[in-house]
Image (cartoon, rainbow, N blue to C red; front, side, top):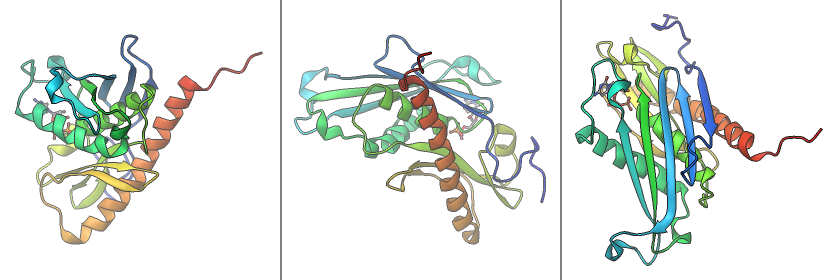
Length: 232
Ligand code: CDP
């Protein structure tokens, strides 16, 4: 079995760290780090819709904003929204919406802001995992959590959680995936590059298995905040 650039096994994710409650002023917040990719999410709401005529009498409006800091990448990124961040904001919203009981909060909006403070590939997935924990931290009613990680096909092998160095290898394909672990539903599946048909099953299996592992990290981080410390 060929070694990956950073020496990981094909089914091995990078080191993961998660923390819930990292922004004092937000209704809910979380940090999710996978290798050198770090996402921080803040949730505000449910709150009044401004302007009011945009409110939905049936359900809450979910708004997501993905932002990559200028200093998060080796080549300084121009600050502010661009085509990529607008697309990723939509992708993240679509990955989170199925997990939220939006009908519990008619005529309101829930705002999710995710900042990538350091990027080494896999930022949309890190953003989704951070945002899902922040939504739970905000006390928003959810039918499930959402956990995300990118699978891929590098040098003829199905691998999990590509870093930037692997993403840049000629012929690599990147397959970001988001998954609701309780209902076992996929809420994001993208393919950047080409994937041989006979590899799809292995990609899906490795992707969902790894999302389940990310879910365990999310649960642990939530419990760390909400389980009262044992009194002595
Ligand atoms: O981050 P993700 O894999 O979800 O999305 P991507 O658009 O495929 O970007 C892959 C990686 O390219 C990012 O995670 C960054 O490491 C890098 N990138 C960069 O260096 N400069 C940019 N302006 C955009 C992305």
